[in-house]
Image (cartoon, rainbow, N blue to C red; front, side):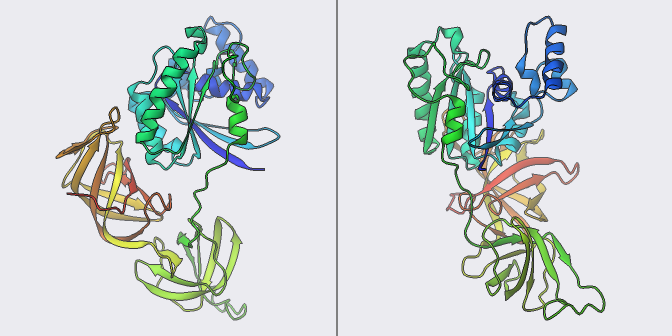
Length: 413
């Protein structure tokens, strides 16, 4: 069965958790004990029925405050497709968590409160989704019951978001009017929208074409080098080292010519074991290969660069400034790096790029060049999500402070 990964995003209180709870409830994906627990919590708070937002708020702090802090992952299936949902937080200070949830998603469902329309966080989440390579956005105009299911209001928000998405170069945008609270147009059609002829949210998610992020050329970031046992004699390839990891592109086949990066040494594949994405391979020659190296297709290899330029979503409490020393984790390799150029900063409201900036603050997005202590084999993020991305780590705290999406296009200083 096909698997679709999607993230819900948008501003705080636009109804993301309630929508996910409604999807799970109406597709019969909740166990009785979960329903009983939600009903008990709802009653304790003085409510009636089921507060479905509680289904995804798993942390105690979230339940007590009535907000979503962490990324909550939920799973459900229909006869047509299986789903993994990332319910991401709407609060500005937890934008970093939204990046985590959206980074592995195929589709982003951007919720908008019909009363308020697009807000800054709605735009920020849409912009981040586009930067993270998500090419299919669903605009879920929620709480339509609070605007009397107004077609005119829906069309106003739809047109505004379509213009914004066009600036983001997102090729597919689908707008759906709904009410997560009563379930209208979530799983079942709403009787209040005779003017809407499109699918419900679930029907759309069940039938849309799943975007592919596959890269045909071999990319194997080496995670483990397995040395042969002393005295091993298991045939012609038994005494060679195995190189194991998770494939980031392509499928290795015996006889394929490969290059090991960043060293540039070449060989051919002698043996392959495992099922994608977890595999291990042996090479015809004994090469100096270690954890962090990338084994790649010799005819279509990544670019090995001493400095890397990327769109960076900054998640650190302290701003990123030119000259800052950081660690960059790319694939299975972590290297020291220095931020040398801050090219620009993105205004998520207007999508204009501000040049001549001297820092990136928390939740800001900009283009940055880092010089790295060792050359890194990278692809453009649009080509390969894995070899085209990295995380930025604070040298002192060892905490993640940024996410980078590599751009190999020329960027003016």
